[in-house]
Length: 297
Image 1 (tube, rainbow, N blue to C red):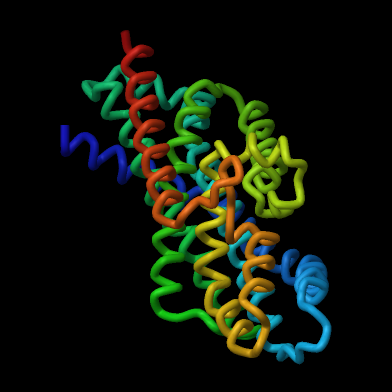
Image 2: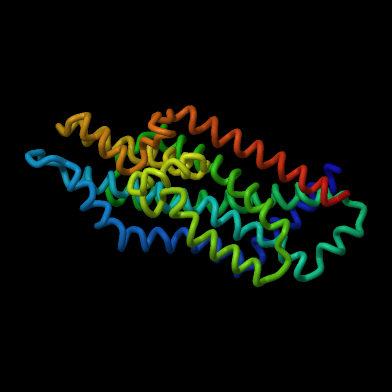
């Protein structure tokens, strides 16, 4: 089993990186988002922060730029970890379209090994692309206003790791039921356009209606975005407080940008966010295994 699984993982990973269209689409998407975010959203975020700071406080332009670049960084990675996973996992559907999956199924390889092979290869491919995007974002933050510590960077990498696992298992479950190129395009378009809104990356959840906020508080993507917000922006927000901005104003800003998220008016701690995301990944993995077992029967 181990040798068969290893061969499948190697085969799927090679096919992803050899498919220049699929690979570059996955890689370019977060880089394009970085350019678009930096070009069009940075001024919007900047104006929002300046409006939240009371008059009379002289805040350095560099600190504001650091806060804004941290928000852009977190927004991009919150979306990219999921959308890239769906792009990477398209090989599963393409094998159905081309008929390659039938050749694999008539071989002695078990269906469970085949499913795990797709999952692990997608995980590897998504990790590679996502951490290239992290590197590009770190360069952008360094150029605009760097206030992140080494621990902040390490925690961002941990957040990306968990979100990639979440995105990979979610895409694996959905892609199981896709069997045509049109379905791939439709699902990719829906995920790309909708996920950023429901996870709070494009627009903070604090700006939504109270009822919608409560609904979105059940979604794991909400907490993934909040974790990234905290670790990308913590250094700049601390510097902002040291410059003389009152602590209550800082907390208000954290509420606005979803560093602080609430579950029915109860503030959710960082550890609870990690726990919820971890449990979600485990549950979805169990669902993926169960669905494959039922389909095999």
